[in-house]
Length: 571
Image 1 (cartoon, rainbow, N blue to C red):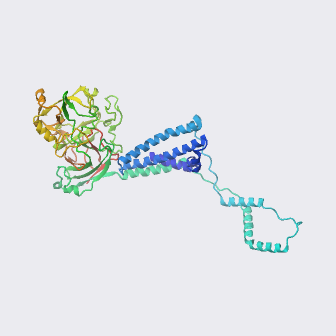
Image 2 (image 1 turned 120 degrees about the horizontal axis):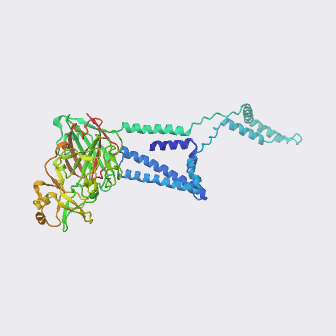
Image 3 (image 1 turned 90 degrees about the vertical axis):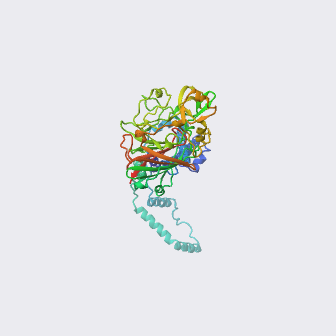
């Protein structure tokens, strides 16, 4: 629509003869130093050209973001500034016109007038005839006979000049005679309606963009392989099957962290053996972040390290994550109509504590499949959480009181997970100093030295990643239930993980297996799932299914995203 309106406006102004109103030339520039009305008119023209430039930049940068061409932080920033330039132009345009003519000038937009008839088309023959007639009227007549005859020498020279100019004189006389005989007729001028022409061209131009969008959709081909060639799930990208496949690459942006620019390039490869599909996802992440809500002991007790967790928007002490969304809905909106941006999109349920919005579908029985890999919670043990977006669920009492965030239609598939949080919140004991909150640990280490060794080099700077081989979870076998006596043996300043691992995933929640590695600023994640799990919460991996990808850099909800979906094509 934006492109169509822009094309229509340009064509309409040109065809209707209104381009003089916005013509930028020396006269307009000199008008800046003229009277009040002239200077305001020149300022208005300059504003209009600023609007034209901003609109061109907006369309170009928006197209690059939409189609994934140079869709990085710089392009998004330029797009953002161009948007605000257009908003500023609208206000300045109204203000200048108010200064030019007051209220009467502003209400002219509600009193449209007919365009003046265009001038007749220039007729060259008629113009020449008019010039000849004017020349005859201004030429003096022949001299009187009473005048004295010229000197013979003058007569001789005059005769010579007349003889030399005779051809030109004869041509002029012939043209005058022809002009007198030619009737002066005005050629008929056919003037097409500027609005109709502009609308037709705009619709044609917009149709080209729609067709382009339809035919250049990003397609991920899932290649067929033999069962014996299936890759080993170990996070190693050197499997022969991956080396022979060209990845689909796309830039995702508008996320949290990622060195402050919020963008990450994601590459994906895919194969299947007729029963299971295998994916290799690699994405840019400057740090290996494993600190998932750790606990630190202080003089006043155990504190939860966080920054935004109380609102469901932790963006410091959170593990790296990666998400895959699968849907059969053919839409071009990010989130595929499962995300509803509003502080309170559901009137009968609690609002979003972050003010950003909620995930849910709007039809009973309609689900979007969501996989979530987590660097600490479940991921290291080979499981990728199988979740879904579905119809909104009833809020729990704690969600009604805004103790924990309401998730609307975002929920795990039926079954169990092998991790849980290692703390119990005490909501009335928030200290407010540095984002700490007093909690009670569920479990404490049996051998504190072994836990510290497993965590590697401990730093509480969220922008510093963990060392290779470190892990920030404890198993139930390595811990004991919390008691005050056990707590007294742990010194002040001790940091323990906020995640406990126990058992395995089960049920529908256990459909997706994985393995991941981080090296040189990149995560590599290998994933496998059956092509069709026959679960109502899962979407089959078949041709025509659409996929979206998102990366999280130690952030709870602020993930990167891309606009256009990826269409799967199963070989």
